[in-house]
Image (cartoon, rainbow, N blue to C red; front, side, top):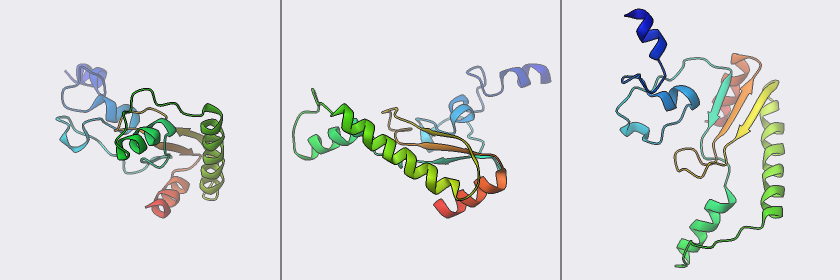
Length: 136
């Protein structure tokens, strides 16, 4: 039984623990999820939720505010790429003040549960904790 539970932990077969939260630290159901979201006490990776403003999502919101249809919205790809690179560099510079970054990922997924999330992996858990404390 223990081997079976160990094998399915964090997978779709696990009916107790949320596999999405286990893998990426986010779940589209949020607090309404029927499964458990285990939040680690310590981790070298931090999650900064919804900090990046996705250009397509921002254009959709602007159109909705103006009462226009969101169908057929066109985003200037060159400007979006430049804005993303500026954002990435700013995040990298600011987070590097807390320690060495091993990875920095910015989600461009347009799903509401992940849009604009930034995952930053530090070389040390204490550096990650310092960054998280300042970001909150």
